[in-house]
Length: 486
Image (cartoon, rainbow, N blue to C red):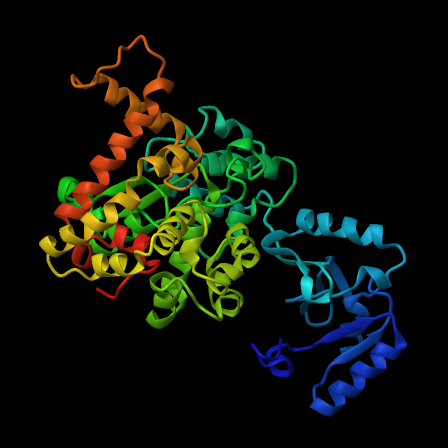
């Protein structure tokens, strides 16, 4: 802790409590050597009372106000623990089941800022749990302020909550503070917690209350196997800008995807507000990471993370720089997947990583790595078209298409084309006059050909009509595995 703040001078008093006399003796010697004024108390932490020690500072006995606050009768001084830390090993505690139960109690008793639930594989996979909490507000003005702030952010778009939502909060909060009408889902989740005398959902205790609460246990969220599909965005935001003419008076509702396009809107159009929505919570974890990086890191680190897709010190940056700007869920996700920026490339992961790795594997297997490099460095469209004629048989191989690329699994897991969009593509193919398939035929009979035509009609214009090196960074990323500084 002393690496981040001056412990002996930052706090007015520091108490270390442990039941082991030998550990207390070691601690006393260490603090003596450091010159720190730390009170080492050899006592069962369950019986430790702050007033028993702070009360010795004066003759009068303090009066307990709450589990962590004490008011001294002589001078009306309030004694309050600003920070409580606990560190223990279950193997050293005989009745460890009660300690495990205490983890649930912490989340019940305090508002959740951050949770870490992982294993230390350097020591054989030992599980460890870290909880960072704060005082939570029950039915108070502060709770109402938190609810209203988040609710106002959500409901400037069409209302998101059920019509009778405000009825639930009436017994808890002043009626005058409850406007009639619908409420957001974030508000509803808060009301449910408050009505059960529970803390607000952890998203309400963020430093930046941008992430809205969601129930991570629902099947609609867990269907993505705790991973994102898109590490990058395929669509060109310049087309959106040109067609929509976004300006600083606009409020945007958009899919999160990888977050690239909405960040482009933010930088180049400066809209009043952006609501990013995605059924896959892991896409929002990715957006949170990108926003936190822009808030907390210098350009060189941001470029390493998302330009090159690699950063050897990502875990340290996450813990020391990025975590204060992220929700507990997003922080936990990236702590678990911190190796994605250090092992290979960040863009090799997620569903879209399958496409990136497939191109790399095909170019190596076919001996066309040099041709792919030439395609990415072509200075004119004519030069690019000539190189594309050499690569096209590899990328647009009918054998590869029927075996992999055109399959429903690859379209969804790698290209991010859900089944509903796939059916739309097939239907569109059936509606074309040149399509010689009767509408009475089963869709599965024409799906392969329809997807083949769609892929060909997408990739050929990209290679022939756009210059990858200059203005098509989407496909350049797939071919090279990283962006360029252009």
